[in-house]
Length: 386
Image (cartoon, rainbow, N blue to C red; front, side, top):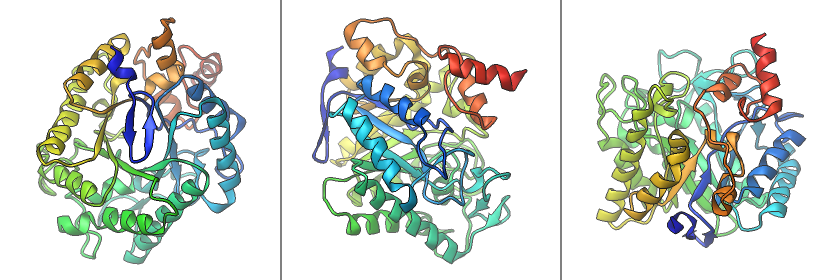
C-alpha cells in the first residue's frame, strides 16, 4: 500500500502523502474566535500524526455568522493568534500542506448567538439583500488574504453542507437579482470571489480549492436539475467543477449531504454504511471528467472514516485505479489524530466506531471530540447527558 504514502504536488506545494485531515470543528475557540490552548493542542496532535494535508476547521469570515458558539473567526483582530497556530503546527510538522476552510454559516447559524440568514426567498432566516451578499463576498476575500498573511498554504472555500456558499449553488436559489435564478447567476458568487482573491494575492503559490456537496438530498438542492426536483442529476454540479478548473482553482473536495438534515448522506454510520459508496462514486465521476477533458483539478474524496480499519485498503484501491488523488478523513482524526504515522510504523490505531458521539456534542454546542477514546470528551458527554 505504498501508494497511500506517495507524495503529490498541488501548485508548488509537494504534499508528503495522500492522507487529508478534513475541517472538523472543535468548538473550543475563545476571545472572539481565537484558537484556545485546547484548539492548539488538537492541531499539534494532527501535526504529529503526519497527515499530508490538514484543513483547519471551518472558520467564519465574520463574527456575525457562526454555526458554533465557540467557533473560530478569521478577521484582522485574530490574525496574530492565527499566525501562532500556524507556527505551532509547522514546528511539529514542517512538511504538512496547511489549508483553512473559510465559511459563512447562513441558514446554519446558531439562533441564540448568531445571525441566521438566507439567500433564498421564503426560507427561514433574515433574507440577505444584494448588497449584503456583496459584503459577505468581501469578507471571504479578506479571509483568504488574512490566511495568506498568516502563512497558511491555501483556503478551502466552503460551498457544502447547507452553508451560504452551498445555498448559492442550489437550483432552489430563485433570487431575482444577480445572485440567483439562472445557473450563471448561482455560480457568480464563486466566480467573482475566487477571481478577486486571485487578483489580490501576494504570491502565485497560494492554493485555492472548495468543498462541495455533490448531492444534498433535498428538493432543489445541489445535485438536482431544478428547483422542484428531488432526483439526483449531477449535470449542473459537474459544470461547477468545470468552472472551478476554468478559474484556475487547484482542487475540489467532494462531499455530499447536509449534516443538519440529511446526515446519513454526509456521515454514514454502521446502519447507513452502504451510502459511503456514493462518496466514492461522486469522486470517481469528477476524476473521470477531469481526465476526459484534460483538466488539472486535484480531487479529494471524503467519508473514508466510514470504512474504519478497512480504510487503508479502500484508499489504496481508489488511488491505484486513479479514481481520487487525496483521501479525506473526518471522524477518524478525532478518534486517532496519529493515524497516518501509526499506520506507517505498524502501531495500533484507534479506529472510529461510527457512534456519532462527536456529532452529538457538536449539535449540543459543546467542545467537540471523540467520546470513545478521549477522556476529556467522555466527561463532556457524560455531563451533557446526565
